[in-house]
Image 1 (cartoon, rainbow, N blue to C red):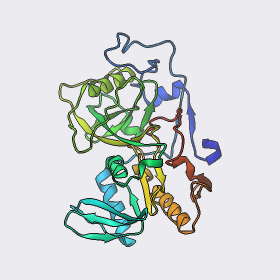
Image 2 (spheres, rainbow, N blue to C red):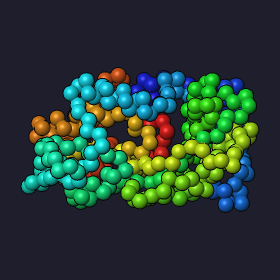
Image 3 (cartoon, one colour):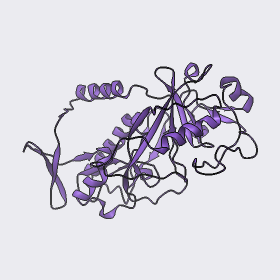
Image 4 (tube, rainbow, N blue to C red):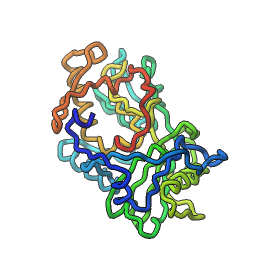
Length: 324
């Protein structure tokens, strides 16, 4: 796939991985296990046979600044932000969007509404009855991210790598203050905590320790602390972790939902996808019958937007990916 899209990559041998990441052990531990499993931490046979390095990859480590930059860019193109307001109703007539009502009584007329409110996606879709024809649905799930002090001689910060390690079902990257950030890749053994976005707690659980200990399998010198530090928040996910960028059964109501944690950095492309879908609808084209396509300007690839359809079948081979 990378060759087809002309995306640069390198195949790394075990020795090259070790030369860049000398504190990383390369033993196999798959499949990922819970700490309650008596074989947790016991390596299986063999070692990691290699990896793939993407020199053009990266990550956002200041989401507030990145979001402010996106806000400034949107405002320079005519967008208006209304902070501290709550949408209390979505108006429609004859199965067509007509506007939004706010908590102060203001009514905003609109013939087109792009819904991109994250973990409330399921609730709002049910509110306007947009879910009735959807094959893929969305769920708010609790996610925990671990912050641990980097061990002595830790070189991940110098290399600036974000590492997706499906053998231990964790991803990691450098974090501010000489820390390492550790997230889960949602292996089958883990419990997926689906919650009500209006009623949930942001406390760490046993999952924090599980992720820390899984990462310690790869980095034996990684220490744990009695103080749980990191982040607890919600992901809006679909059954196969791929987002929904699509129209709906309601005319003028479009969805950019189910984006989990990896679509933030794809926001500009997601905006172009939504613009393509809206233009397609304005031209009286039926995206469900004749799928829209969009050319990705930097790589020249034509993207079939049915990959993000609400009507698609669940892809059993799809999973969480920090690589986006």
